[in-house]
Length: 334
Image 1 (cartoon, rainbow, N blue to C red):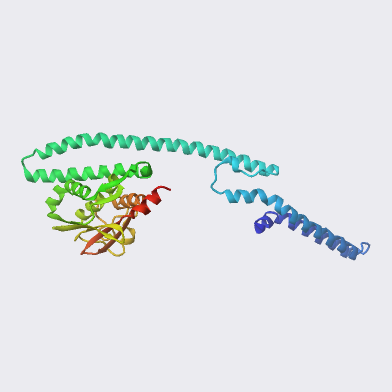
Image 2: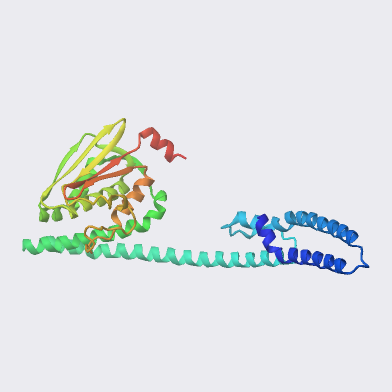
């Protein structure tokens, strides 16, 4: 701040120095003026000027120090008290801009809330004809057409579900209901949803569940499982997806292992990033890059650790590590 203050007052400092030098020059060339006396007076004058600068530094920079400390604070009531007409102008301008930004922000938030509500309402409305469409598809006699249409129906259903949860993610903490969830039932439910797709691709499931209940939010855990299983089925061919659960040091661990195309080593650190798809198959337009991102967001809120191991061409293993019951209750009660 000292350097800033000196740069701000540089023109005044240079003027005082120039004035002192000019008086010294006049005393030097004019023999009638005693040079030593003039130099003595100029020395005292410059010393007083330096003391004046030191005293003014604290007074003139206090207002700006407060502005620097508050940075992103838009509350006009926290503005420092101005001590000069120019500081008053700055404070008034900041107050006016803060009020304008707050009003603008509120309007945008209202618009975003309206858009979110409209989209959620639209998704729920679309689910009705989708349900009717599924009933009509199930009644079709041509098995080949039924399988093809069921697959396309499932894709739409999963995309709508993803959109629905994407809109709910920012408010997930208001939507949580902790309970002892039936892990086996949740997994079977998600497998049943993907059944037609799995039959079409020749994919089976091998379940080895030592732990069948976990303390969590069943609805959001279902969503996380849906993203992992969908990902495994999408990138696997004829094979089995292995799902197992067990205890490690008092923590429940759920593992989903597939034998699909795998993930490139360079992509592993980025698979949970928003919108990231793949650098190996960049032309895969079926992927939105949102599923694993949303799964990680939901898992973080539930204090579930998601880990992934993969070898390109040899499959991928997702591991969910649930918090200990006592630790979970302690964290959620904060």
